[in-house]
Length: 216
Image (tube, rainbow, N blue to C red):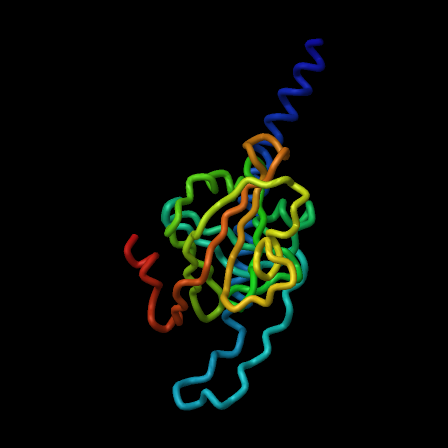
């Protein structure tokens, strides 16, 4: 019984603390790689050159960085790198973009899933978000500020929250949305907590940080 107890304690310590250390190291590498990749991307057209086609950015490989997520309510240091994919391996690296859903700022539903209790627990405080809270997604040349419109706890098998218009099959989207998903309650996968947001503002990096970040 003592041996079994020690195994359980060690397993819990690994899940709750050691995985956080691994995730933090991975996030540091992802952030460095993403910064380097952004610096190599072609700059957007300058004023007066809007007629030129926008450079095509290569698709992101599974497990690689897509964007940086900032949520002012969670503090100035909260800035996890969102990776491409929602496999178990991808989510160990950071919150993951659901493949096939919209990309940041695009019309449609940009869906991001993340752990709540392990591997850095990026979405541990998702239940604290309130309607109107800003969420800022940073990409190579701009910031997209989304605002929380609501939240819901659903069955873990519900996929309709990932539709282009959440919970409305077959409806064509007309606005840019972002949906965050995580396990609910903490330490359980019995349900899913879903947070819905809508794009409120787009800010070019040359203009400085968006108001949601500048005010912090």
